Image (cartoon, rainbow, N blue to C red):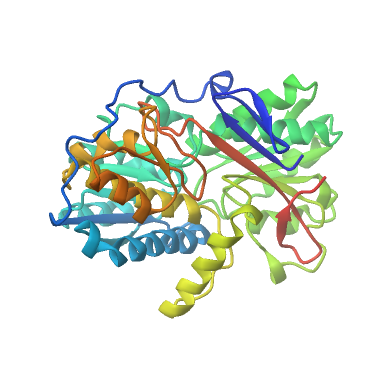
Length: 424
């Protein structure tokens, strides 16, 4: 099996495992309230000028995720504005750089974005970076909506109901990756871990799953954002002689890999969403053959229509082609959901939109399923309740802004050092 999906129900659909999220201690049950009609939806013809910002990684150790995430936002905005004459809502996007916890670009970018009077900020990609400015954003009464935060810290964070994410908690990714490593016949495991809420949290859940499957974690050194050399961590892991190594890092992995090549077979290396990218000719051909990794969201193959449309959009805009598509769909869906929430609320006020985000995602348990902004907008403007099922999945927010349904794709690197869906 190369793909795992988790929702409330326990069943198997088309070869995809579907089990209860509660078993993974993900976000709680969705609220059961909500009317079948949206009493506060803006009537057709009313003008809503929605402005949002992005604090996505243009620089820093997740900069490779910036282009697909910003592309997803831009593509969604173009579709929203294409039908503005029908919906009355126009969307303006102010782009900004989150940076990372080393360069701290967010220290100047977040005040700049808030000064633009945005209703929401999409970002950051890094959980650790988001935690640096979430209090500032929600304290200003503005929605923070991440397409890629996976730390379990956000599930219980005091955010005044203003934080949402389209990526699932690392409880799920950790279980999937830990079990995958064990199922591949590995009995001992070494980890190299980024010392922040994302890295240590994901390492915890990988360890729990691997040990529950009968394995033993024999080394798990950490490093800090901004570190440039990793000889000590690599030496510690190799000295423990593990069957496999899981690299729970961001783009620092590019510096680590040359020291690992030849020390451990490539098919004993495991990647995570923070570093799973197409390395191509960055390393000699075959350097990563057989290495595997996990990435939240539907498989890249299954959203090929979307990525093809995204490529065509970028080409028409004269924007460079993407090398990776990680979290593009989640960013697209975040943008669509924010616009739908404004329509449903009849307002661009952040608090009013936040109250409607659960509803338009289907979290109220009511509503008519729709799969595009235009289709969902028609439902809302007609007086109904829209339940948006996105490119990245059904989403369906619970009362703390976590998706109650989630999927994890498993990928494998080929001879060209790029990854495709794992078919094992």
